[in-house]
Length: 177
Image (cartoon, rainbow, N blue to C red; front, side, top):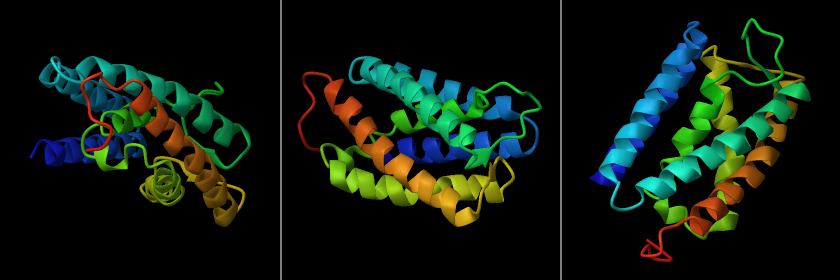
């Protein structure tokens, strides 16, 4: 039941980020993820809470680098109204959101780096494409090139996320779920 709630919270936050951004309220997703993060850490304070917080913040860094590079190379863009080179706040919030699932609803991926790479190569581009279809961002160049760039980025980012999750796991957590 806890894994299902984790998955549902992840989905709610994803939609808050994307639909908020699409409707000029990019802050909405960041607030939703912050609430999820606080509630998650409070519920897991005796277990994985601290490690989940560190993982979520680590993935914010990964996401800032990845999405900023993808944006700078012209594969995606955001209507932020600003000329700053960083991505909007709701994008790193999505990466933190992902970090909150890796020990919970996505725990079955633990240590499965090749499967993580394959899943990232498929689900990453689909997520961005869905966000683009909902109006939160734009995919550029031509759609296929953008999706290929996203697939490559996510085929690296997901195993890195899994590595960071396993490296920061609490001492009492098992090797496999």
